[in-house]
Image (cartoon, rainbow, N blue to C red):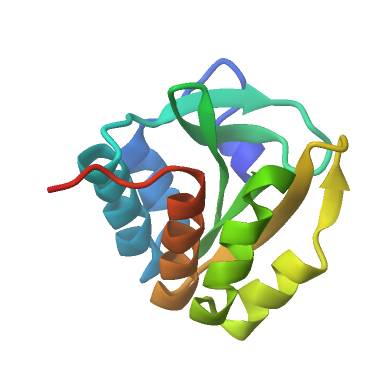
Length: 147
């Protein structure tokens, strides 16, 4: 059964229900990301429903000080993130590209324009490497709080 059928617009899932849907080893990556965002950025997940044809259903967003950390889309054994990087941040992104996995770095280099504001990339997270790539990209948008 598809995500949008399990949780239609009138049935908002919990973070744990999203984790259960993701399942497998990626379930722990999901839960660790939620914990990371709450502890290192002091942001809570915000659930919203989208009727977008590409990824319909409930998704999760993190925002702080007007800054968006992307939109997360639950999938079976994975989740995808769509994130927009302002052109003003391109020099910082270029500096971290060597620290990203080759696949994620290539996605950024080939990323399309988003309304002349920046580049948008979408990638799937299903292992610790891609999760760490996402965290590194987040530091370009906003540094985590000092512990």
